Length: 443
Ligand SMILES: [Zn+2]
Ligand SMILES: [Zn+2]
Ligand SMILES: [Zn+2]
Image 1 (tube, helix red, strand yellow):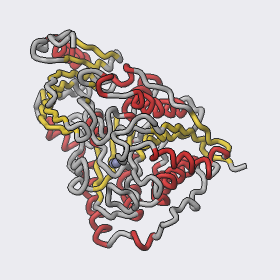
Image 2 (tube, helix red, strand yellow):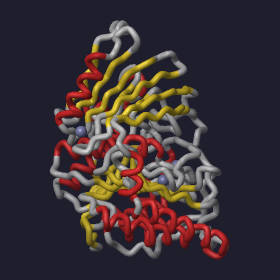
Image 3 (cartoon, protein in one colour):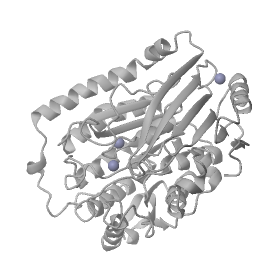
Image 4 (tube, protein in one colour):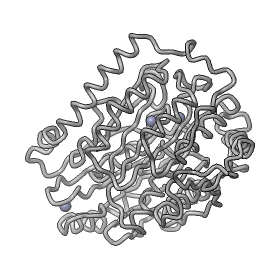
């Protein structure tokens, strides 16, 4: 009997009753074909590959990460609780050492969901990786986490959630934002004023093939990870870089994905996008599972795979090499850039507009962070949406210093109850979510 080198846990959750519309690319068949392929290839007959059933996350698990407006139930379905629950189940199995590695093959996806949630963006309502990670940080002795997002779209939600967290390295590799949704993820997006360099973006030009992805992995992602020294590595394993994907323009293959997984050595992988339902997903997923388990994946090849037809041009190779120089320079100069940003400022503000394409909602945010030398800094977000809801959200980080805790409480306690529909606070030092009474209390 074939035996996995790394014991590997899998969770499947196709979410039969959740779809944006019956013909939308984000639908249950995405996982049904993969599930069939995994059984047909006999993966569950391999000693050391084990299936888990997804548990549900709790409201508390979601509120540890998100400010849902006006409340969690208004912006989620039961499927979201199970999808995030599948990730949590796999995370627990890995941290309890029941398995060495785990892969949550779940939907709905999560990497476009930001800290404040007024609705769905890019098919995402809650960030399933972040909900898992913050649960794991409460339940197990882990601190430094690296998330490598290999979905074709920039993981702008995960970036937003960890923008101010120096203990979370977020690396996203994706098709250049000038050519694809959500239009962000450029090399100069490096993290907030207390976490510069802990966000790394690697935009790749359309038609990048295996060669370019693996170059970026070996010459950018791996050296940065090695220096960051994470306790665990999470892969947001989106598969829409595949050459047959209908909504993107990349030329990645199942062999490429499997090799990337072998090099990256993620502890936990969580499925994100991937819309080539028959042509890519079954092969890419089987390749990833075999690579995680430490098994030979050389036989996992799409029936129409012709590497010579999808090989990237020399111009693309040069483009990626140049991007690599910029990415590594940003990483190496992170301390200097941070010093310059902070200067002698006590607070730093940023204003921005966020669009929820799936639900057609516009949000305006004003964020204020306290620049702190003793912790990553308390921050507050003043957010209003085109649906007429106005909230204040205060976030006290996990390792906040006394002064920042005090400041967070002050913001929360003194906010004008007449001016907001909701006043929320995440106090991560006590793992608490608080809500103050407002004029909107009966809503
Ligand atoms: Zn990505
Ligand atoms: Zn995607
Ligand atoms: Zn502080």
